[in-house]
Length: 405
Figure (cartoon, rainbow, N blue to C red):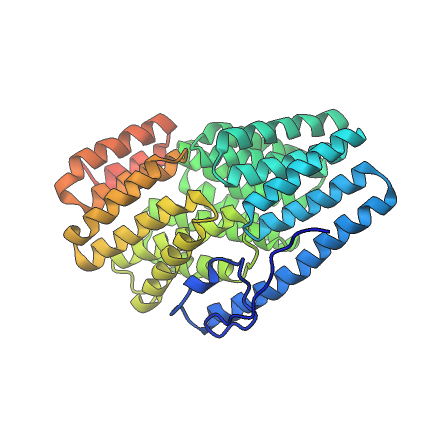
């Protein structure tokens, strides 16, 4: 009954049965056999989840309950989201909201609205996404549902994080953490430890050592809950922390760890795909500073993989496009100099300025100031203005250390 993407028999870099709708695997040419094997595994997994989603939707009407049908559509929508099909996810999630409203099922409606808000948010329509997620949070509170409400709070906070609203994100992450502690939800406590302390660090409210301890605890909690996704999130924040604290050898080590972790996590959850770029940035920082604990060829491979894959899946997740272009421009500056990097930075700035991702935009200006001496004064002023507007004290400290007046 459902229109599903049709597979083709075209081989892609040795990946038989590659599907026509998995848009980015064809662009991973020359990136190694391991990527081909990963693509094969993802394609097989996609076939299974599509079967599961279609089966759920086709079986639900037999129960003659509108809420069940809505939940089936929500289920299919979230599977599509995990595959990077945001528009289709939004379509089925919106249908799930309508079905739940018709059935008068508030739980199904809140879940569907959360799924819809998630798809919209990671399409980088952050204002609309935050509105939908905020409404879902209120619905969960009204009906007293706690498990899904924790996930909704996490997504709601992450939307503010993507907007560079670190203070508001911190408040919501803390609310999630309180509920997680009260209800003994270890997984959600791990989420809280991976995100709230990092917000406080960026705002200048928590020192680097305390932030590191919190991230270590996040990994410990996530290991106990078998939560691979949050382990990736904690590692990417550790990599960010090492870069901002000027810890060269630690940045190199965390680049390797983060890259390995996200490479084994095959679900295309958008904010974890950002970990590829955080690993690349840590590796690039280590290269620039002459790290010796990790071979330079390994670090270069991580950088190239990060900005290439990030650039490709940036077509699905627009908030990744600017950071990918930024890291590419910075890598070119390291290897070929200012003349070759300048036009790439101009393009990266143009893309970043067209998005609502304020932190990402400020970072593009910052890297331009670092890599392009001819425009350093202007780029540095633009970066400072944006960091100050966000209250990003950690970034301002880093600017003072790396680019003193």
